[in-house]
Length: 194
Image 1 (tube, rainbow, N blue to C red):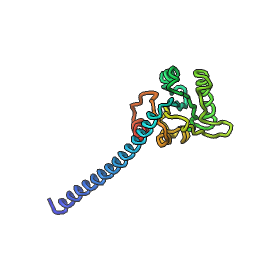
Image 2 (cartoon, rainbow, N blue to C red):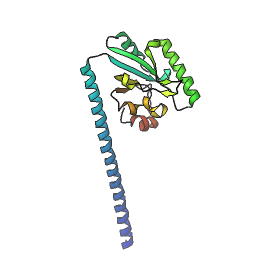
Image 3 (tube, one colour):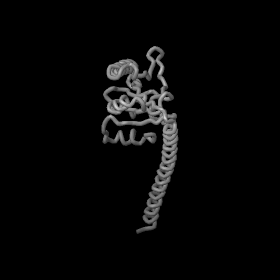
Image 4 (cartoon, rainbow, N blue to C red):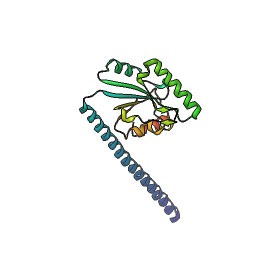
């Protein structure tokens, strides 16, 4: 084996090691940042939870719903309606902003009508004002917000997990189905706020 071959072999070995070290430290740095965000988010949730526990008041619970078909909280809503001395449950209908205005309005009204028929007008809130084309931030009106939609890109910022995770509210995501696919793993499960 000649000197050039030995040098070439060592060069590729050293180069390969340098790439692996760079990747290791990049991944380590990302993990540290992710861990800090996770810890910060968990601390925030704990603070909100402790404040709710101390307040000893009725819990104001909202279910943010885009589609009636993705709402998995029927039993939860039923229990809260039975125990109205402990809970003030509401359904907040929020629009799907990802498929155009015509679809948004049509789907929004269908979902709202469905829940008004099911629970009555007193238990359904608007997350959107059709007359002014305004998305409503109702998060300050609730203590706990259940979300049936994991896709922040599908709703207005006020109705997304990232936004609600920074507010003085406990956001809870309840999946409307099992999703054992790569998209879910990379785009839903990887959200730090969940």
